[in-house]
Amino acid sequence: KELTTGSTLFLKSRKLDDSDCEALASRLAKNTSLSQLFIGYNSFGDEGTAALCQGLVEGAEAGQKLSLLGLRGCQLGDGACKALAEAIPKLPALREMGVDENQIG
Image 1 (cartoon, one colour):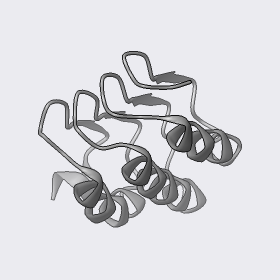
Image 2 (cartoon, one colour):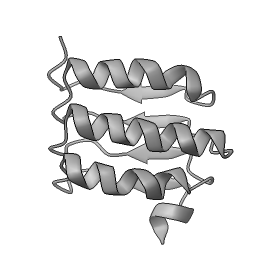
Image 3 (cartoon, helix red, strand yellow):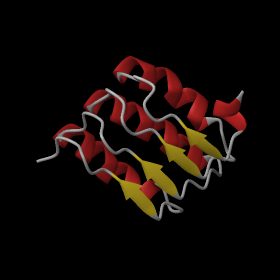
Image 4 (cartoon, one colour):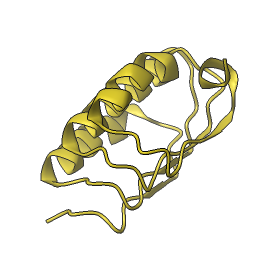
């Protein structure tokens, strides 16, 4: 229930992989209260990030006001950067995003 109603979600260090992110994305899209998502220190990479971005963009279209996205210490590469770059303009409330400690570049 917290995935669809919580304003701050702490999903750090939960061993989440790409398939977990795909499953999470649809739930996050329905959470119009979500303002902060801490999902760093997991094992997902480019595919999982793309799925999360899709869910967060759908959430923003439904009125979600995500202001902070924490993606530190995952397996993000160049594909994740591309997905994030495409999503950022569609997330108007986003003010802070942490992507350090990844495999970018």
